[in-house]
Amino acid sequence: MSVKTAASWAALAQYVGFALQFASSVIVARFFLGPAEVGVFSLAFSAAAMIHGLQDFGLNRSIIGAPRMTRRIVRQSFSVSLVVGIGIAIAILLLAAPLARLYGNPDLFAITALIGVSFVFIPFTVVPLALAQRDMDFRAYALVDIGANIVTVGATLLTAWLGFSSLSLAFGILAYQSSRALFAQFVRPIWRVLPPSWRGTAGLFRYGLSASALSLTGSIGSRAPDLVIGKLIGEAALGLYSRATGLALQFRMLVGGPVASVLYPSLARAKDRGESLGPLYLRLTAALCAITWAAMAGLAVAAEPLINTLYGPRWLGAAPVLSWVALAQVFFIALPMQIEVGYLLGRWRRVIGLTMADAVISVGLMLLTAPYGLIWVAMSRVVHGLIWWVIHAAFVQGLVGFSWRELLTLYAKTALAAFAAVVPLLVSYTLWRPAIETPLAALALLAGAGVALWYTTLLAVRHPSAADLADVALGKLRGWRLRRVPTR
Image 1 (cartoon, rainbow, N blue to C red):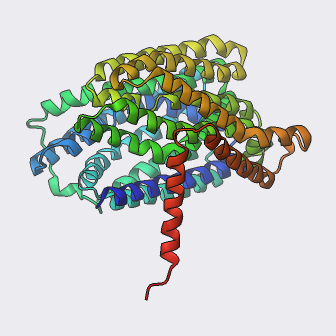
Image 2 (tube, rainbow, N blue to C red):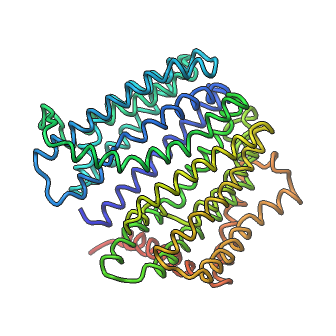
């Protein structure tokens, strides 16, 4: 499979997965579960997530990057993943009772335990899908992911309709992991390498522990704030916060995923050719920021009517949280792929150190602001984003060697275009209808006008990505026209 075709299948899986998960979240939130019920699940999931960051254990990267693949290596990799998967499942099961006691909610025990059981299926997924990626069989990989997402949505909606409350979301995780493991067997059947063998796996365990240190640190930094909110503010507040952050991150991946997916391979190829990485990093950053800054600005301004229309009035408390969280994403987008760049250039220990420092800062800001309420917590995410940028900017600049002046000029042009994108919404709120009364159809039209104004501004300020975006759009248009021209 060519790189272009592989990327197309990967993008298809990503967009279909997003659409299914988004539709499911809207239906569940609007008709079945309230903020408190979602908050209970978020507590259990966040606690488990700090452990299941180890699930890959570096095996995916090890299999894909191996010079040659043998049956022995596959058996060893499966054996290691089996130990890790069972170990994670046991750790989460042991966590279930203490977590329920800590938060005084017995429902947490069953939810956490069910999440733990789902990780027994991980070993039957990691190795088969890594082999598919190694063989560039992204069609099979995409079909496995799409199939698992369909099963997940069905299981979640069915159990929510049957009245399982917060537990329905845990059933969704169990359905995803088990169906993904089942479908993966049609791609690369793991039974062909049974029984497992642990002879010679010491090196894989050492590598996995090193590779998982970053994942574990990142999981703590991203999930510990949820535990703080649940303990100091309450489960309903956590439900609102998780809904807002989930929507912001999903939207960020939707609009910026295709650009972000080519950044690391492009830098890797440039490094192999001995080229300077700074100009290429700035060009790719320009394209990513141009798209996602405008999208995040639009999400922040449209948060109230969007939440009200999609999720209903009982979720309106998530609107101001969404606005602040979306604005915070601007800082995290401003220095893309900082982890991957660190790995690419051999500075993974420094990356782990920065990730640990970031986790401490994130949780510290949560502890400081949580006593003052959820809005203060949401505002602290913007402060966290700014600090994150400060501690990572010098590190990334030292690695790729971009020009500070060019980067700051790029930021200024991007911010101007992002502001232009939300001008129609702001004018409408002022002169026509308040945000809460803006219907979805009007919101879509105003967003369309914002896109036109955004791109006009990119051209006016001579943004570096304006020409690249035009080339992509024209290329797709030409391809569509060629497909419609009848052949003789």
